[in-house]
Length: 383
Image 1: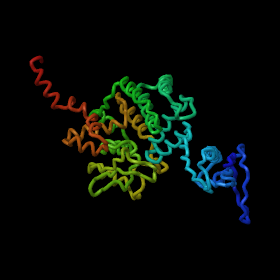
Image 2: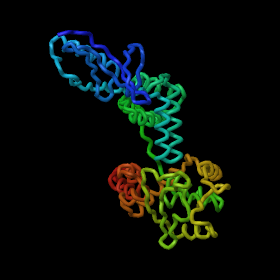
Image 3: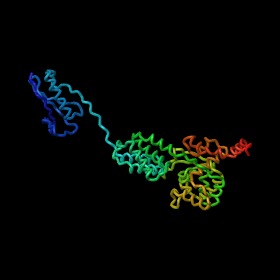
Image 4: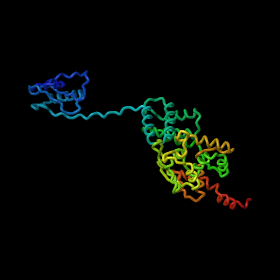
């Protein structure tokens, strides 16, 4: 039996249907779909074997050629015109490396579509700080030392321990989305470095001073904050269609036209006082359903309620720090004093968990008249 070298050829077909075989060039790059053939002699006859598997490459054809030579040597090929070809399993394609900039852009785009504008801006600001601190190009280059350096960077910028914790928590969410599970221990350590501040409610004297210093417009706005228990963004985006004047109910719901969503998706209803609803009805004065109740001069969401409150607090000579969120805490404590259950207060506030509502109320028992009376009774012997 004659034994010859097995050579690799390419086969092409011209416009007239005529086939042509050319010796393959190992230095040439062949496109997908190229037809490869093997040419050799077996039993004194020249054979041309077409490799019929899909996805055949020159490298694969060359490997089959070496196999055929081995088979010729062992006498495995006789009169068979085309010996069977064993398919080659393609090597898995390695995923392309993702740059940190691309990962940030994708993450923020997802946040933009699922969170409020204010939340998006906060996430964007936090992650920008991390990008300034981290000098790497690719996500897979981020290691724990980079996160430690980020914490040191935030400290050099003068942020408080609580603020550093909040910023790192935001960035850690971005890292976890990108399969970087390195920040949990750092986050726990940062959380242990500051004491959770108890949010205090306004006292009755402070409320009296605030409302006495208000003009009519300011009084209505801050009365709405107090008696609805709403977050700032919820007040800012309240529209006339959210108010049911027949039942004295406020419906807190998303506002797609303002690209605003309710936190934790807590679409809810809150009862309002009859006196407040009477004032709001007077204020409406023909306003359309989708008009904002408290717009700025351009008819858009007002972004300066905190500034207005601080001005009012200054006029009132208020010594305590003026915060919009304290109205929300005051709402909770007044509701609790009025006999509402913690579960009802949770629903009104739109908290996703009962524990958050309980944290709002945890100092309330100590300040109650019942607690004071009990304390006087217990220690009466030392009066």
